[in-house]
Image (cartoon, rainbow, N blue to C red):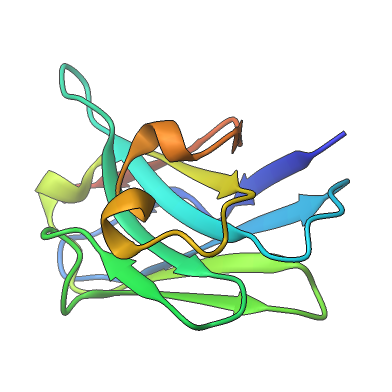
Length: 128
């Protein structure tokens, strides 16, 4: 059974940083991709960042570009999201997701429907 568990959310001041981690277990896919999405109250879920586990492809949402960075740790089986210069508009529940379609092109990795497995989400609140 595939499991994704997020951690690292919390309350941070505007301008601060947070690092989210997603621990992945229970899958046997050789070629997969991980994504981070977020959903703010009253808004649709949107892509933050995604990457092929091979490291061959990275995709960033418009809101994340230049401030956020997605990485993966092969030994720990984690996908990480480093978020810098956080703004109040970044307040949302952040979800990690996994797709077995690791060779997907960038436009496919942006789509929510591409991902078969999802974590429960972790709250990020940016407020003074």
